[in-house]
Every structure is written in structure tokens, then in C-alpha cells.
Image 1 (tube, one colour):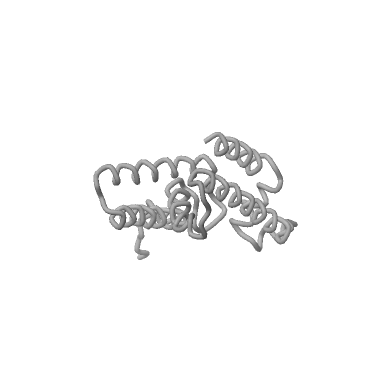
Image 2 (cartoon, rainbow, N blue to C red):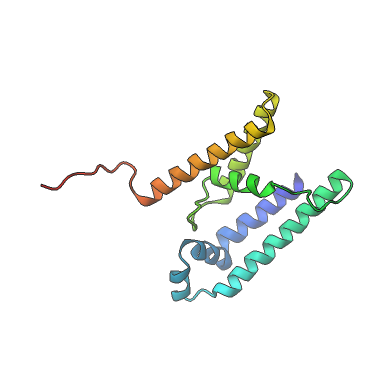
Length: 158
């Protein structure tokens, strides 16, 4: 838990207070506009992938330490959980929008749902269906809001 808090503090600072963090958001929002405004796309993307692989290494070590062994499929299906937590927390699947605290809140909501469904005795398949439905609804809401069609009425021109 301490590792997660430290990593969150570091990445929150990096994404909100540094030039590289702004460049990451810019690339996620519009890669062509980022390129035209002078962002080095290759260097910024490489930095993001290096940090991601570092975090994957830390997670692998933590899983190995908690289970007492390492297997090739130890983190199977964790990508679905990460996407679910991010989308529930407000990260846009269209790119360039989202904050780190939203992902933490999304992970908390996901954890409460997962534990509540497990406590209720729901099978794993039902749990995955419920989480998947929430992710689909979150993505639909994001697409509707980002397209600007929410709250606008279609008026017929005379």
C-alpha cells in the first residue's frame, strides 16, 4: 500500500507539474497538433513506455512477493481491471483527458463492486459481466459528452 501511495504521489507530480506530463496529455489528445506545436512524439512516447514497463516490473515483484512464487500467467486479466478502473474514474477512451485521482477513485469503485459481488455470492462470470457493463456505460457516457450531443436539442430548420 505504501508503494502505491508513493507511486501515486510521484506520478501525480510528474503528470501535473512537468513538461513531459503536459506532453503526454497533448499526445493523447491530438498527436498531429502536438507534433505541430513542437512536442517530440518519439521521445515522449518512449518515456511513457519506459515508465510503464518500470511499473509493470514493480507490480510483478509485488505479486511474486505476496504469492511466494512467480508464474507466467500471474497477472492474467489484470488489464481488464486497469481499463475498468480508469474508465470508471473518468479517463477518456478517446484520449487526452483524465486525472490520476479519478483513476484511484475508479479503482476504489471497482474494488467495492468486485468485493460486494463476491460477498453476495455472485459467480466470477456475473462479476465480470457487471463490471463490463459498467465500463461500456462509462465509455458511452464519455463518447456522448465529448461529442457535444448531451443536452442539445435537434431543431428542425424551417
